[in-house]
Image (cartoon, rainbow, N blue to C red):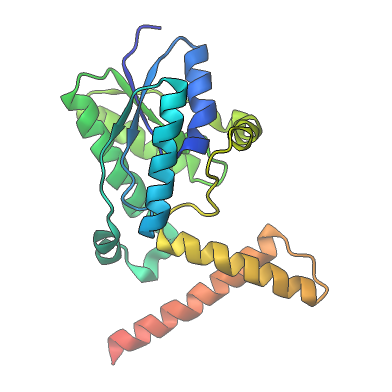
Length: 219
């Protein structure tokens, strides 16, 4: 398929199946790194550098837009609306930069490795990408890469790639750490931890934090 495709790429492990799948269709993607939502800097650097090394081994072109954006992230993300931070800030911030690059450099289509993750808001991602595709006049190449989730994860581990433990931002890092602590606590109480009961406790803590923040605003 003769298509110049830009693949917004969040990390090396998520790119494994996407690259393989696209090449199976005869599409040679160009990887595009722009992820200022990843924190702290040590995590940002680990993911970026791993992707650089992996791209070289797979002989796939990689464009790196280096931007570590902790200050802007903290200023832009409302701590009382954390449940929508992905679609309100993280997704559009990254996708718009990718579309701008694609438009300026003659790409026919664009997609993202975020469509591979079973933990991301898949429908929201597709919705935002489709809206921007119309705005920039570039095709959004939709693929449900989640079908290759296990295959991609197995290949990433076999290749020795850096496997992150949370989505990217400081809040997802906190949630990941809390989740592990809550799971351990439930086990000690003789309760089997599940995604549902761990998430319920995390959400209850978020509500308590929001109430506290709103109280501070009123003082």
